[in-house]
Image 1 (cartoon, one colour):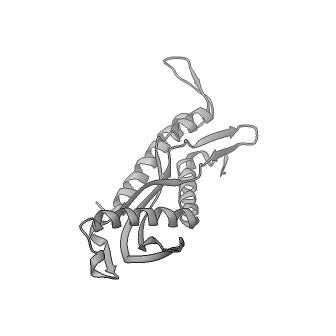
Image 2 (image 1 turned 135 degrees about the vertical axis):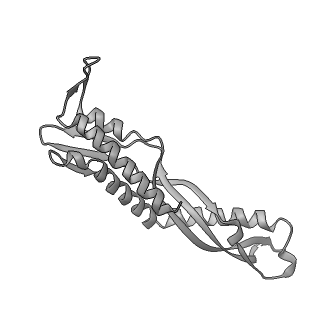
Image 3 (image 1 turned 30 degrees about the vertical axis):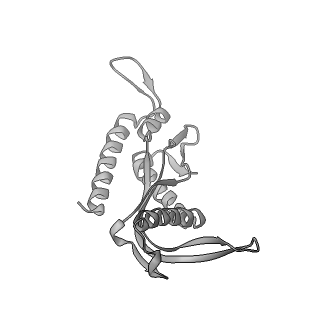
Length: 194
């Protein structure tokens, strides 16, 4: 299955769940006919948003890096020396393990959902995509594959920590998902995220 098909299935399931929960909770406070327990809209919404690990975005990643070593000179100074260059293709999964929390202001008919900042959940490098340019043949050793794989993972992590645009996109994806999940409530409530 393609990523688009998986995403479409996940959205369809989410819409179905939201519709069922929205129908059950639509009038605000509902009383269970079995236990005489009251459930508030806020409780139902938080239950609906109770996701153990939320995947906010998944992106392909193309990168390049180089293996540089520090060589100590006789005078005590160090000199950087590049051994080889690497290009690679990878994949990054962004999300959170923190819960989405909703608060319902019945008086002002407003639902506010707090969305945590995304973080890197998973990084992977396509091992077959790694390509090398050695500055000298002697740098091509038996451990080059393992060394370069770790080098690529570290490069991805460092670049993602510096470039926050991908994190902003992941958070925006989550905001759109929350708005879609809570759409059944939008007739009676204003929905906002922060």
